Image (cartoon, rainbow, N blue to C red; front, side):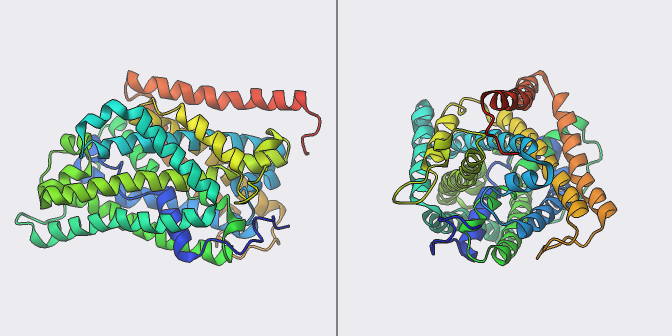
Length: 442
C-alpha cells in the first residue's frame, strides 16, 4: 500500500536520483586524500580498482534485488523485517541509524578543511560553522525530497567540474612522465592495508541508504537501476583519475592528506584551480549531508509506525508532507557528534555499516529460500550457493579492514570500543521497548 506522500506527483526523476545517489555514496574524491599515505601509489591504484568490485558490486546487486521486490519507504528496514521479523528489523534500523549519524558528522568536519583554504582563521569557529551546515540541511530536508534532488544536481556539477579541469591540466599539459605505476600491494603492512581499505570502503558506502524513500521516486524500479549505474561509473572513474593525477603531479602525499585536493589544484593549475577545488569540497560536504539526511530521516519514521520509537517521529509536516520531527531529531543528534576526529568517525562509520549490511545479505538469502516465486523485476542471476559466495566476498573484505584497524594503533581503540558499545546497546534498548510496550507489532 502506497503512502500519501508516495502518491504525490512531486517525485524524484532519473537525473535527480542519480545526483542524490552520487552525493549519498560519494560526493566526489574528497576524503580520499589519506589513501596514498597509507599504502603508496602502487597499492592505492590497485585497491581503487579492486575494492569496488569486491565491496560494492555485491552490495549494489543485493540492494537492487531487494528494492525491486519491496520498493517501500524504509528500504533496508522493510527488507529485514519481512525476512527476519521485527526484532532483527529493529537491529537493522538502530545500527544503520547510528552509522548514518556518524557518517553525517564527518561532512561538517570536512567542510572546515576546505573552508580553511580560503580563510585559515575559520578553524576557530568550527562548531558554529558545522552547526550552520547541519541546520541548513535540516531546513532543506523539511521542505521535501524534490528540493533536495534539485540542489543535488547543482551541487554534483559544482563538485565534478573542478576535477574535470584538474584532469585536463594533468593529462594534457603535464611535462613529466605519465606512465602507469605497477598495480600491487607487495610490501604493504597489514594495518596500512586495513586503513587503506577503510578509506575506500567509506568512500563507497550508502547504496542501501538511497532506497529508504523509494515511494517518493518516479517509476522506482527502473529509475533506481539506471541511476545507480550512472552514479557507480561516475564515482569509479573520478576516484581513479583523482588519485592518479595526484601521483603524476609529484605532490607530497602527507601534504595532500593534511590539506586536501585544493593544494593539488594549486600545484597543477595555480591558485584559481585550488580555489575551485576548495569550493567543490565545500559543495560536496553540504550536498552529501543533505542527501544522507534525506535517507536516514525515513527510517525512524517507519520504526515509529511499528511502535518501536515514539509516535511523534511518524508525524508529517502539514505543508511539506515530510517527517519533520524525525529530521529535526537527526539534526540534534549529529550536532553532538562533530567533536570526533575524521579518522575516528570513518572507523565507527564503516564498522556499524558492515553490521547492518550483514543483516541485509542474510535477508537476501532467506527471502530467496522462503519466497522463491515472489516478483523480483531485478534478480541476481545466481542460485543460493552462488549468493552465499557473492556475499562472502564483501564480508571478508570488511573483516580484513576491521581486524587491521583493531591492531593499527592505540588511537583506534577508542572508536572501536565506542562502536562495540553502540552495537551491544541495541539488545538492551530492544528489551526496554518490549518491557514498556506490549503493542510492538509481531
